[in-house]
Structure formats: structure tokens, C-alpha cells
Image 1 (tube, chains in turn green, purple):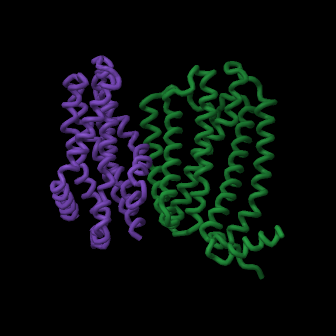
Image 2 (cartoon, one colour):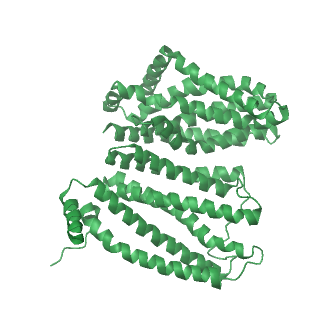
Image 3 (cartoon, chains in turn cyan, green):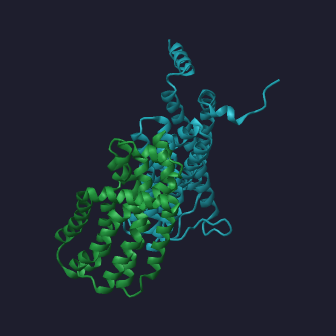
Length: 251
Length: 222
């Protein structure tokens, strides 16, 4: 009889490595499907905005990237909390694997925001609350990556990075509100579950693109965590067997 | 509990007094940075008055940053920190003492010298009072948050630059409310609201930051 399904089994890199390997193609496929559907809905079906013209369509990249940049930081902090509480090796690796994607999303959000802001507001950059907080979020990602890169001992890097993530997550609301009171110019959030000011197709396009970004982030984080595992566990037998097996295939 | 905090404060102050050059150099760094701005921007009093709160606060953040790496580095090098971590008292209390000592050595002098620098920027007397209070109330938060960064980067290569990368984003609320208090006073709105928020930040960071720093120190000492 098979063993009861045990989540802790996958906390070990040796079992998670092949598991992640089988999951990646599915997440890639789902991401591509959502991406194509979202782009079709966003670029071709959604009506032209009566105020902003065609230029508004950049929100189909901008909004999902902003959501993901914030969500990934929370996920990283969640992994950090698990890692510090249960002392699991996988948690720190997952947090480190997610960080570059999160930073990329924050950067994309700032870049697309600037590209949208130039025709709409007439300025590439304004010092309003949401732009500034997004910029600070990018700084937090970069600080985390710099800290983990500076510590040679992988376990210490995980724990110190995790602590920084938890400190950051406590500070994010404080930073957000302080920046908000400091200056508010940005239009209010136009996505509202109860009553949305957007056309339904626009909303669906945005949600589909958000799903696409989400699945992409999972796939890329799993890929990255696999390379981190190989690097960190290079002294173990399962990595040697894995690499030898691959070398054998190529011959 | 209070005795261990007082003992750590006394010890750190004594050490700082034996090396007064460190305190004075951080203070002069503050003075020089603030004095550079008029040279870069121009001497128009109107412009300087407008810029003064921000310039003084940014310089205060940088001057505090400058002395942060020393908060734990010396004790780490000679092994004192490991003894403190082994002591029966919670490490968080020890860090609380070190944070207060750091503020007395690096934050308090800034608040005392700030009004003089404010005069250089042609600030009114109301604004000078608000500025002094804001720096007095706000700098303990800087020492508290900075302790976390100092503990995380202890003993790393390029620790100083890394420390600024980690800590400066977390300093932003203090900067906003600190400079905001002076601005609000100048514009006649009254800076009490900003000062209250600044005090809230200080109490929150003095309460929580030492424990986070203690956790970071334990990770580094493992």
C-alpha cells in the first residue's frame, strides 16, 4: 500500500527537485494559454477607452506586473516565516528563487507606468504615492538580493534574508501610508470587486494577464530553485546521480 | 531589566567617550553635507528656506548611517558580543541599551547642532524649534531601525554600502514625517500631527527593532 501523501516529503531538495521538474511544463503551458487569451481579449476585443484612446492598453501589462510585484514579496515573506519557524532548507531557496522575478515585476511596473504616464500625464515620472511606493518596493527587492549575495554561507544567507523580508513586510504598510499622506496625485484604484468602473472585457483581459504572470512567476521560480538546489547540494549523491544521468543521455 | 539596559548604555558611552574622534567626525560629516547644499544650489534665501527641512533630514539620515556599522562590529571582533549573547539576560534588552547609547552618541548631537545649521538656511525661529524637536524625536527611530541593518550586515564584505541599501528604504517614513513637521510649521498648519507620528515611529521601532536585531545577531553568531 502506498504511503499517505505527506507534504513534508517535498521539503527535501532531493524529492522536490524532480517534482518541480515535472510541474514546470504545466505551469509554462497554462501561462502561455492565459497569456494568449489575455492578449487577445486585451488587444483585440476590449473597446478603446473614450478618454485615453489606445494607449491605455498598456495596463494589461502594467497592472498584472504591479500586482505580482507586491504579491511575490508577500509570498517571499511567507516562505521566510516558514523557513525561520521550521528551519526548512527549501523555504530559503524558494525565497531566493522568487526575488529576481519580483524585482523584474517591480521594474516592469515602473517602466510601463512611465511609458503610460508620458502621453497621459505628460510626464515620465511624477512623485505620487503609488509610483514612489513601487520604487521603494524595488529597493527592498534589491536590498534583499544584495544581502543574500553578500553572505557566503547559504544557511545564514537564507535566515538573514528571511529576517529582512519579515522586517520589510511589516514596514511596507507604514511606508505606503507615509508616502500616501505625503503626496497623492495618482488616480484611485479602478478595480473594485463590487462595482468596477471598467468595461467587463477590460477587467477579464487584465485578470487573464494576471493569471499569466502568476503562472509564469511560479514556473520561472521553480526553474531557478532547481539550479539553486543543484548548486547548494552539489556534494550530495542525488545531485551527482542527476548530473551523471543527464551527461549519459547526451552521449 | 532596567539594570541591564543601563549597564549596556553606561559601557557603550564610556567606550564612545574614549574615542571621541568618531562622534566628532560623524557630526562634522553632518555639518559639511548640509553646508554643501547652498554651494550647489545657490544662495537665494527663498530657495534655501524651502529646501532646509529636506536637506537637514537627509544629511541626518546619512550621518546616522555612518556610525551604524560600529554599533556591533567592535564587540563582534573582540568577542564581547558572543559573551553578551550567552548572558542570562535576553539579547533584545542588550540591543535596546546599545540602540539608546547609539542615539545618545550620534542622534542627540545632531539635534543640538541642527538649529545652528537651520540659521544658515534662514529658517524662522518657529521652524527652528520644530526642526530641533523633529530631529530629537525622530533620530531614535533611525538608531532602532539601523540596528537591524547593522546586525544583518555584521562581518560581511562591503558591509557599509550594503547597510545603506538595506536601511535607507526603511528610513523613508521618518524622513517624510520629520521634514513634513518643519514644512507644516512653516506653512502655518502646525507640525504637531507630524511630530506625533514621528514619536509613534520612534516608540514602535524602539519596542520592536531590538528584538529583530537580536534575532539577526543570533543568526550571524551561529
